[in-house]
Amino acid sequence: MTNKIIALVDGSIYSESVCHLSAWIAQRTKSPVEIIHVLGRREPPEKADLSAALRLGARSRLLEELTELDAQRARLLSQRGRAILEDARDIVARDGVSEVTTRLRRGDIVEAISDVEQDARVIVIGKRGEAADFAKGHLGSNLERIVRAAHRPVFVAARAFKPIESVLVAYDGGASANKAVDHIARSSFFEGLPITVVSVGHDTPEMRQRLAEASARLAAAGLDVDTRIVPGQPDVELGRMVEEHGFGMLAMGAYGHSRIRSLVIGSTTTEMVRSCKVPVLLIR
Image (tube, rainbow, N blue to C red; front, side):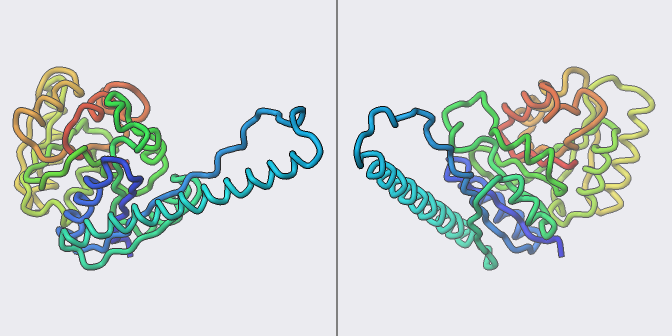
């Protein structure tokens, strides 16, 4: 049954927002939450050749010490990972979710997601990871890889979480945009939230027709829907609409056939996601 909320935490300042967002989704969809922390593969040993400086039994003693230090480091990383998971579970539980599990994994984060996503409703991840806390212009290095590989919607948490009261949907009429609309129509998460579907670009009869069809699908699901066509560049206009109209989240297809398409394969939407201060839901 694909109803689990998968929350990925790494101990960064985004992890708390990931927990709050996951709990909020879980409560609206009556879903359990599984929190996952992935320990990266062990770093390769230093390449420096110390053999020329080692004599008699010094080499063996040094190798033994290095082996013990490596084992100690691995134990500390595991303990840290469990502490991160315990803190995350406490946050989700305090937010009112009773069914919360945790999992500590080692290896590649994309492989970890591949193993668990078949039971997932959505995957929640922070915009930037631990190493990028102070690099405001940098998106998390794993974000692109996860969005490319995931078969479930990916929710990118903002730096701080606020309850979502309205939704902006970026729509270009393409296949992934229509998948996003279908996902919204089917998901109980969006019940009671006003939806604005916007196309950024030229106002044409074809786009008006496509917007009308998207609006009809959402209205048939009982959602309150508005549609708009605005001129300009998607990254600029979508960000402006979020700021000026106070939308609580942005939803979009991760791939498309227009200027909105390039979250992971270009720069336009990457810039929009980088600067957007609300959660972004990506449907591929």
